Length: 537
Image 1 (tube, rainbow, N blue to C red):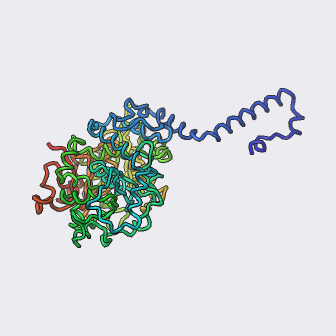
Image 2: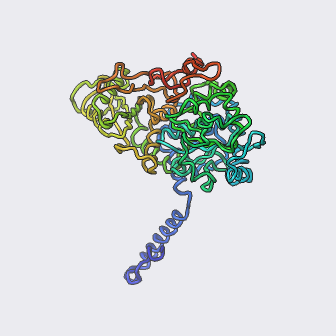
Image 3: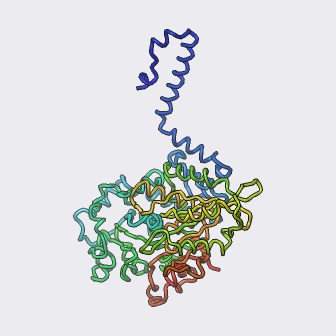
């Protein structure tokens, strides 16, 4: 191929002088060698991405602490997943939320456990044998051994998946289980492997793979259903259980969070989980878990922030999308504001009342200025530039903001630049490029200085928690009017556990779940509903 590509006609060479022949031969030989080198180097793209990440802007420099205070292990090749050690280089300020020594120790222990029990090991092969033809075997008096598993099944949108996988991983840490990730969706197109020397991907030949999609509340091995049917007890334990932690969970399904139920569940070798809610706050209702959680996370509002920094590392393809957009539009701004707009109403699209609500919130909270004059905006060196990053399925929201500020001075004399990476109008979960764009936008929002997000939006929860930002939460409109007030400033960076248990366990049965613990309260955007972790004041 290369011979024909760079071949020069002998007739042409005959017409040229000796020096010219030599020069052309030298040039083409150099190009040929260089091209072969580039095409044959599998790490070339990764090297370029690593260089661009480190040298791309005034914020993009080699972080002083690539391991994030010991949160990360150094046992990975940097080029294979550039974001792992260089995400922090794009943040202007180091995170104030530091991992505890106990969390660091727990993560290193978990990595060893996963390596001993993960896919491809003899322990994994032995454990899966128990799922074949042993559906009625009673494990009540069996010794399960060191390797117990919890399988996370990907359901609902990307924000839900990111929150629930972090929840499942924390549960695995607390119960010494190995977390395995359903790879039937696009998880490996979005994130790198988080554990060294092993894989968290559930092998495609897992014995229950074909049945998992059909698991629901009616499945005979669903924990809530087994409770209803009195089919599980200290004397009768199945080889696997299905945990239904979805928005339509029954009270019986939510008993999963209670201590006596965990005693039963702990004996089951395999747990299969479908979840679409961030259930971390409800784990604190279990006294045994709470003791461990306090040591792991002295700052309670930092649970997701720290777990996400540990397990979520965008692939090089996604990281390239993040860094290129960031450097083109956000890096040189003096200040960055993120605005995430999610419309839940049946007539989703551009809604004037939602636009008015965004303006009311951002101007009331002095995140955006009032528009002053009508003259053309000319950027001078002394003027402050604020970049506004809008994420929404609908481009009309950013268009309106852009039109407001493009030809008018702001009341504070600052220049407002409005950007929106995409506006696809329809959510297209499991379409690779759509999910990659969504993940890119979550990370871009996390890189802003302040952020406004929509109530109930898991996309917004992920973005502000990743960035360690306390967001302004836009109340969900009840009708075509603008809520008053339009938004509320959160006092915690944690996501909300939507459709959480409504009451406590055992002695706290019947007590409002938002009043059982002083640091687990109702979410600000949920009207005495949902649960969220707060640092005690």
